[in-house]
Image (cartoon, rainbow, N blue to C red):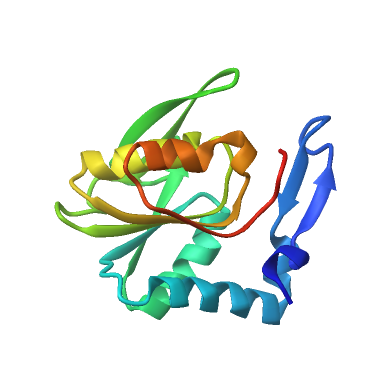
Length: 175
């Protein structure tokens, strides 16, 4: 069964007009969750990766399992103020205002080959900020992987324009 068919769409969440793509239905389905991880691992075969970086919060779920399966470390990127030790941060623009992602200062070493993981790529703001943060620490982005791509919102194209490889298991048209 295709992964896309296991993802729930919630209309008008978090605001009117938005079609929220909810992976919790995929995660609770043992076969769907296994298929998701297996498809990522098949795609990543032959890639040299030192660490998997997951974006808060659903990127933690997929990313930590991939790190375990790949035999590498896992690093969380979180919203401002959520990490307990010294952090580096990167601010980025939202539709109305700004936000910030942070990472521990000792999380990535110069030259580390990084796989960035999240559940969904929409406009690409958070992923772009995460890539910039990783690169500022000397990390090299091997690829950015997502369960879902919303191509109409331009996030994938934004990351690719910055020179990043992008992979997604499925796409949903519209927003």
